Structure formats: structure tokens, C-alpha cells
Length: 158
Image (cartoon, rainbow, N blue to C red; front, side):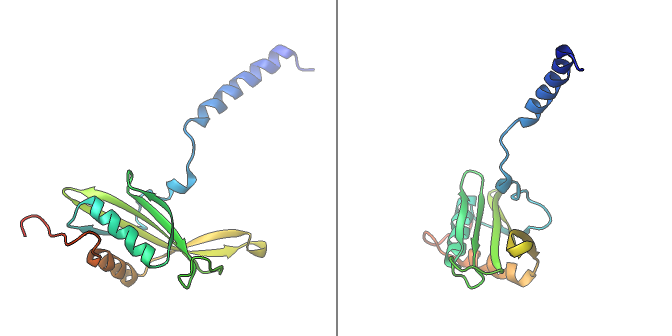
């Protein structure tokens, strides 16, 4: 039989280790914004605020329901049905993740688009397939560049 002292000697270190592991609150949805090689990138000759606003506007126009629009961190994400219908339920929903970062006086936009695939029994879980079509990203970057949100912006010295 285990004595009360031995049980306490075992439980106290375990409790201390688990308390240390808790640390900060996890934000699993935000971890996907880690800028990795799966993001397509484009540099804009405009301030980060302008790039951010244009990116939000273009994805809204495309029918995405935005779920993260964080001007403080530059994070934007959203989801839509395959036809652009926000309420469409299909196995081909699209989700995008975007991150606007400063690049000197200009800005850099990283975008990743994924297709949501339902899997598992009765479609109970989702998998994300990263879309890597360069022309799709070029089109998106061009739309953002040509989007006029608050008047015409021209780079310094022009």
C-alpha cells in the first residue's frame, strides 16, 4: 500500500510540471498565420494600412465571410462556399489566410488559399488542401493592387 507521503511526493511534482506547461492560452486558429513557404508573397509600394484595406475589400467582394480581421497584427482570414455563396454547404469550401507585413516604407502581403475537404465517417472532420496555382495568386495580387479604396495612391516621388 502506498503511503500518503509517497503519494504526495509523486503528485506535487506532476502538478507543478503541468502548471508550467499551461503557460499562455493557446490560439490554434492564429497559429496558421505563421508565414511559411506555403504563403505566396507580393510586395506593394504602398503603406501596410492601404494594403490591408484593399485585401479586406477584395476578399469581401469575392464572397468570403471574414472571420479574422486584425489590423493590429495584419492577420486576415475568411471562408466561402465553392460558388461564392457564403451559406453554401459543399465539400469544396475555400478558406484563405493573409498576413500584411511592413517591408521598409512599403508592405508585403502573404496569402494562402486552401480547399476544405470533408473526410471521415459522415464528413465529421475536415482536411485542408493548399492550392498552389500561381496564376490564381497573380490574379488575386493584381486585383488587390488595382483596388481603389480611398482615392488614388501614388508612391512617393511620382
